[in-house]
Image 1 (cartoon, one colour):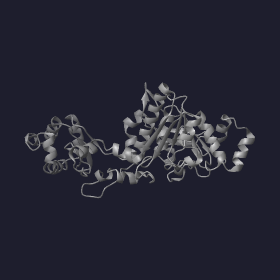
Image 2 (cartoon, rainbow, N blue to C red):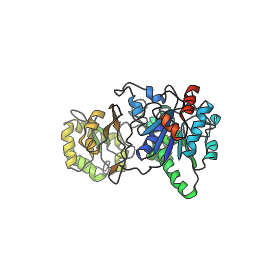
Image 3 (tube, rainbow, N blue to C red):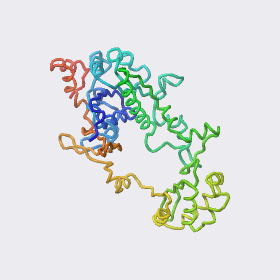
Image 4 (spheres, rainbow, N blue to C red):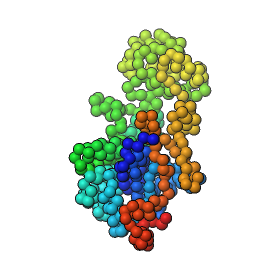
Length: 399
């Protein structure tokens, strides 16, 4: 398997999704990720069940933590802070998502750790960044989806704003974090010095508005909520058929002409109101109801067969079970099973990256809380007596 980040050590002090998503990607690419968790409960998502695997591991936790080693440390205690500093001396990367300034009181902020390891790449993930009027506010994906305008363009045109079905702000922030970390590591090869990365869910959510954001910045208009419609292309949306729904992704005038032919109304493509995409966007309210009426006359699969034969991009709307059962998902191995040492089966969602034909995939399953605590301390030079003392003090969790 592809391991381009082999030899890179990542300290992951983050919790829930954005940070763990970034560190899981780094683990899939070969990094040694050490997950530092609070004793007792660990990452909050360990308790976010049901559903859970057969050993009680929450599905949410399993989704973002494969390939990591876990140590449970109380960083509020000086002994726990000392362990983190010793880990940081040897680390290449540190990820954290504490509130602004939250780690400074423990001497685990960037300035403190950069003094003992100038080559450390330190990535802080917060809701709103390290500065600005909202910097002190906590960051929640749902709230950021609302504040960033994402919810204002999501949902039915005549209904209430809606969040996206998965926590896309967290996930995009995790992807931006992994990209930024790898860029900083490349820069380090030139300078020998690490970097401080400041990433905000709010910034990432604004950035991922992409063409919708530019529609506003160019025109000054407020982008409307269009349900399953597209702001710049018509017809590019969901249509109801006699027995279900289909997606029509008609991206140019040639494809629109083919749609009209399939629907038995070739004259629509010659109508000046619909002959070009800008005209169709302008006359969306007149065109879409006519197409909708025509699509309701036949079954979904019949339309899909005809549209595909005519070279028009289209597809069905599958539920999650159907998506994973799709022959292409099976062929690409987008789900698989990991096993613990005791044989416990842990379903996993594959990393989509392939390098030279090999999947980027961490082989170790998501860890049990503090599963690797003693081994990691031994690697740092702690002897059995010192490890026992850490456990007795409460700085090291049970295990």
